[in-house]
Length: 233
Image (cartoon, rainbow, N blue to C red; front, side, top):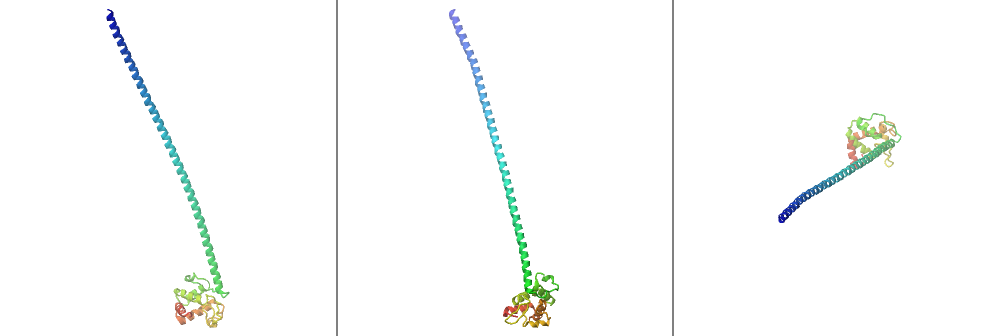
């Protein structure tokens, strides 16, 4: 009888231990699962934090890039404005220089015309449009040459011829030969055949000179060609 109770007691104890072990295993498994879930949750939180940090970093980079672009655009605009101002200043300077040069050339032409006239009688006749580029006695010579029947293409020859002879100076006098006036008539008194004012009137001298050229060389270019060959006409 005692043996029977002993066996029953052992079996009951074994069963109790088994139950306790099962229950402990269940609790242990649950605890591990909870720990695993907690670790996974911690990883998710860390990942979210890392992603947020990366997002902030990218936003900072974009902000820096936009700031740099605005600064670059501002610098470019300032540079363009400075270049435009410099170009405008240079253009104004060149314009002033051109105006001053034109005024100087006009004054020089007037002085030359005055020098050529030498206080002589001024020509009051019309100056054709084709002669407008000339001034002083040269303009008078161009106009009278056309009146004499020569074409405008003859004037360059006449211009060179009388530049060489007298510089278009109505009071030019060659003390060696006695030649006088724009055409360097020899003697100058020959020009009295046109008018008595041959000493002071460029138009009188030019008319005589054109008649001389036509009678001896046909055209001003013929006279210039002879002058080029011999040094006189």
